Length: 305
Image (cartoon, rainbow, N blue to C red):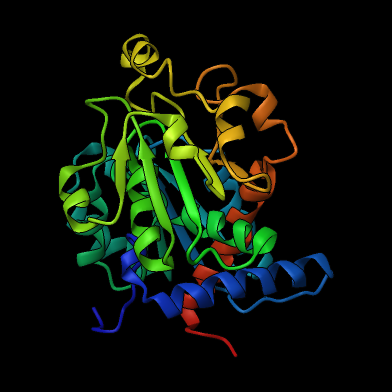
């Protein structure tokens, strides 16, 4: 394995300047695509996509991105490979990285992507773990920049579970320089270790307080993949944490609403908000494609002038 192999397991794997570059580059690549420009910098390159969790946006965006770049994306599920039959992660990494150019993993424990990356000869992208979802944050940041300009100094409210998306917003606050307020029920706070590393992030149990004068309000489902058996308990705990018109009214008049999707209307967000004129969830979803294309290009080719 070469010493200069870059991985993207969390937002902290890139410098602030590199993240700014990725957002700007994503916007450029989106413009190229809209203009119908053929741009194939990854011709004959292969992306291995390892899925241990189901996906819609992640699979479509990475597969489409590689096709548009002239490369190929290979779908690998745990049902169809030795990954699901007990082969050590380290051995899978050694083999897969000898045959492909870059690897994307969507799995459960964050230690899985860390172990894979440690034994991979090629770049590894975290496409979601139980702890982090950095690719989604690239899309979210791109969307905010497109709609409102720099997010540095903005007020962002996270309302809901202290989950992998919440953790990635904490990393984003540090890297992009915005103020983050988290509102969650007692017992559902983000990891204490991350809170200790981010003393400027505030946590409360009042969505109305978190939303006050916010420029961006973000939420996610109350029960993530693997937590379905907790649905009833979580519905009870999160009953007062729905992002609705009353919560949005506390934010600035031009505040945006984001959700990584899929959304459960009537639970974590009201239909009036997600389908309203402050919602940018569809642009946000599309930007997974453009932001990840920028990431693929960066990890394989470096910064393109």
